[in-house]
Length: 348
Image (tube, rainbow, N blue to C red):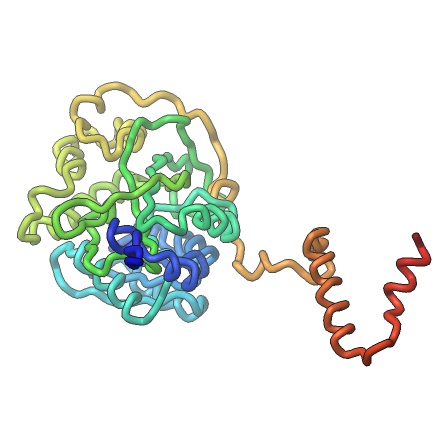
């Protein structure tokens, strides 16, 4: 009889044994590239180090003290790896692809997220994130949509800072994460960390249901500095003209930044920013503290104490008891009596 072909291999699907054996949801990893984010960097690091097992962060020529702060924070967080990036161009896609390849060569098999310093995962704990990703263990890529929020307080962003959110910002800009256990090694990270590129087209991904709380604009000065350094670095790329479209549109509105700050946040990422920005942003629907929306606790806080462990389910309890009886019968000499069987028979 002819041998049946391997359907996974012939159909292009990934072998099931590799997915199960490598447990892709076991480790959570994060990488990113930052520049001049001193007003938010400490709070962002507190967030990502609380939910990811390892964070690889590149500093791109910061001049406002961000790099020194990152080095200081790395000494306090063992899961934070800070690296310098000294090239003048905004080679974000190439740099993030190199991190992905490095982790694959190391044998990592978890989920790798690509985040910027103004992006916070809208999850309350590491356990919440891990449980959600477990549903997508057989997917190569997932994506998360932006949820733009406005900062309601001046100064540095703190965990207790008040933010305003809208129920629907109508912005469908995505950020992506990749499953290293089944990822195609030829995949590259697109500029902006929004998609993954295969040999000929974008890799397919699925919405995992998690939102990215996005604080892109915290003040007029921060916005103008971001546009100046970001556009200059982007223009150094060989194909830089095709990226940062919304940055260029906001740069054209520089004289109106003060009056349009909230509106720019609401429409941040819109391809038709010049058309919609004249429409005032609706009032935010929800006002909350940042720490009430995203995780800041240490991962070790989620490990339950022995006294608080969940009771064993009935099926597991019966299975464990049966295993103990089987071992006991195996050790008992022939003709001997099992005291547990006698007690159970007497009770009946």
